[in-house]
Each structure stands twice: as structure tokens, then as C-alpha cells.
Length: 338
Image (cartoon, rainbow, N blue to C red; front, side, top):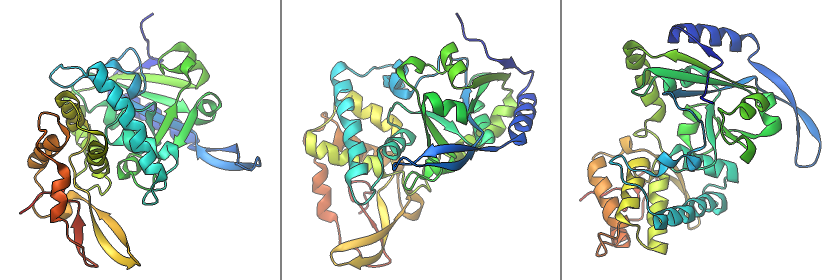
């Protein structure tokens, strides 16, 4: 049976007026949450979470369960060997963010960081901000927009709901007021009748006009931009380390990663030194004078792809200098200047 929304509006404005009125009546509620010690404590949570989609998609699955996730823009698809490599890459990167004292994330926040900067996970993105959901719903080329409204208290009974709004490292998640829903296998499709019933999930549809798109696509770009995001370079940096440890990727997997992962620098300002360890504040591409995204993409392609067996990223480390306190330092595998 084809998907049918719970309600269709005549315009995006009508949908916004209705939903903003509904969610504004009771924005938060109190849940009793069990702590690790077994004691239940009251916790104030948002009453509703939202998801915006641009297009008439029949299903809503996590990125790792969508076949189109593993296709390149030119139509090429990842091979079985590429998928095996990717299945190895994702948990290795997640463990890097969990085990390393530089980050010390729990597993949920580690996978959220991977998700928000381009890698597939079992997380389905939601937001606590209705306006952000509408921005995503109107940002694409389709003339149909949809917003899903999820009841937090109902959803938490049947699925894992995680708050990423205070993510310690992923600035993009903070900017988007992000939440994550990890459905069970039985509720894997959030447009299924079972998921809609169990999770208290409602779908609202509306047309997206050219003026809606022109206005809200700019808002969406603000939510997604990486140029001033100090966390945007983490994945590119650690993928390069992965290649150094495990070997190069196929040209197709390299291109797939470069289409998804921000080609951003790994750079920081040294605040102080504690014995041999530096205390740093991370910085973004806008803090570097001559960051060239296209040139950096080609450097990473040469470092990662088996098409370039002669190119070793470790050779770039010869240019690494010991930074002084107050100076911007960078990993020379992610920022190449003379």
C-alpha cells in the first residue's frame, strides 16, 4: 500500500501555522528516566521532535539501510569489496572517538558525529526545532515537502531516542538542534503503519513553491555549512590515518567519501602545554588564510586512492612544525601550503 500522509496542506505556510500552533501549546513534558544506578528521576524533555524531507519518498530509513546511500552522483555504485571496507571503516572511526582521550565520546555521540559529517549509520535524524525541519523539507528540488512530528514520550518506549543538541564535538549537530532515533528492526521504516502507531508519529505534506525553496534553502545551507565549523575536519583527518594503517581505497570508494565527507582542515590553536601534551582549541577553514577546497580534495584523493600508489600521506608530516602557544597549527595532510 502506497504511503499516505496524515494530512495534506494547501501551502507550506498553512502547514507551518498549524504545526507551530500545535507544538507551541505544550513544548515540554516531564518523563521519569532510570539512571545507571537504577533510580528513576524526573527529566524535562521536548514534547515533539521533527523531521523534514523534500520529496515524495515512500519509505524513511536510516542512511545505512538506504540503497541509494551507496551510489555516487554519477551513478556508479560501490562494489561488494568497497562495502566490506566501509563496514570496517565506520566502527573503527567510531572507536577512535570513544577510546581517544582527545574526544572521550560515548558510542551514541560517536556515531552521531559520523552521521552528521557524511557517513552512514543506523540513526534517523530528527530536530527539536520546527523551523529547521521546514528548512530541510524545502531545500531540495522536489515540489513536495513533508514534516514528521514525533511524540518524544511515545517514541522512547519503542526506540532509542538520543539528544545531540549538546554534542561536545559535532558543531553541526548543535547547530541543527539534532536528535537521533534508532528504530528497532520491526520499526525500521518510519513511514510504516507499525512505526507510525508505536512511535506516535504523524506525517504532514505540503507543496513547496519556488519562493519557499529560495528562502528556506538558504537556511538549510546555514545548518549544513562547514567552512566555520571547527569539527568539520575530524573525519577527513582520521580517514587519512585509517588509510595509513590499513591500506588505500578503491577509486570508487575514494570518490564516494570525497562526495560526502567535508574536505575541511584539521587545525587548532595551542592554549598551553601540560608536560608534553598540548591543550588546544580547534579552529575552522575560515581561520586559515589560503584554504583551497578543490586543491585539498585532490590531495586527499591521492592519499586515499589505489590509483595513486606512489603517494604517501605520511610524507607530508615532514613539514609539521612544533606550534607555539597562541599560534594556529594544522595537520599538513589536511592543509597544504608552501
